[in-house]
Image (tube, rainbow, N blue to C red):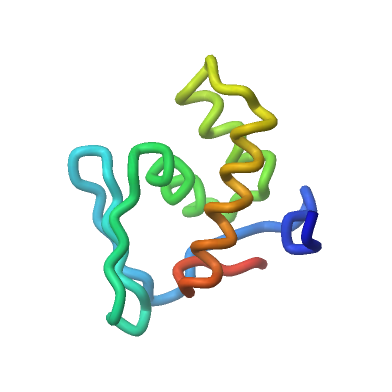
Length: 95
C-alpha cells in the first residue's frame, strides 16, 4: 500500500476544482479548466465525502453505507484507486 493510502492520511478537494452534482452524478472541472470529469454515483459519494476532508476509512464507510451489500475490502481497493486518479488529475490532494 503506497504511503499516501495510510489510514490516517486525509484527502481533500483541490482548490479551484469546480463541481456540480446533477441527477446524482458529479461533474468536475479541473483547476486548470482543461479537463471535465463526470463521476458515476459511487464516485460522487466519495467526492461529496471529500468536502469534510475524509480519510480512507471514512470514505470507504460512506460508500459502504450507500451500498450495504458491498464487500468493504473491495470498496477500499476501489476507493484507493479512485483517490489516486483524483490526485493525479489534480482534482484532489493528500493533506
